[in-house]
Image 1: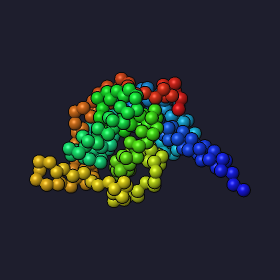
Image 2: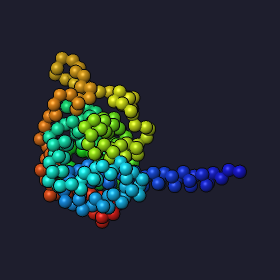
Image 3: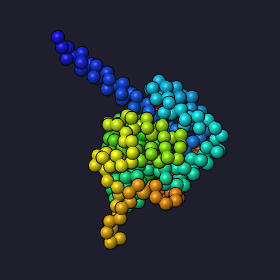
Length: 255
């Protein structure tokens, strides 16, 4: 005999557990991927406890260990890897659209999602696709936040590969984020093209034809981030609250 009511309850419970797991991952990742400061250091034990409870301690462990080092050195490394260079850009649309004109249209989708949520989101000098901010948003508006992250899956996977190539401890955190999204992570960069029909960015305006910008972040030497991007909102204001949208659960030193 079948008991459809029991099955529905089991499905609902599984969905609730999955959402709680994703919320913990997003909240923790939003903290540890942002510019490190003393406030973050004070929360590392709480983060470690939360991700252990969520079953993803191994993904976060390398970065948490890294963040327990000398703060000045860690801040310098973060600025070098994420603010001064595009090789590990935390602005998601850069990986999808490069520096093409199409990127502006993609940024509008993030802004519109923030507006539609009814939440007050203070960009604080960041572009709306700044990953720690998107993750914070996903904690407060799971549906819209998950939609943004899912649409940005190719960008997340390209970032994961870049971090892995340079043996940076942040790779596991990105892998944990991707694990909360539908489907398996690709095993190589070519497989990323199969994600949601993603295509490499091309610029077609004012240059006499399309130019292939495949994997633009990997070509040439790292370039300085443009004014108004990650450096202006993170390293330049290390003592300030990163964004207007905060995580109340983290403000209470809990996850």
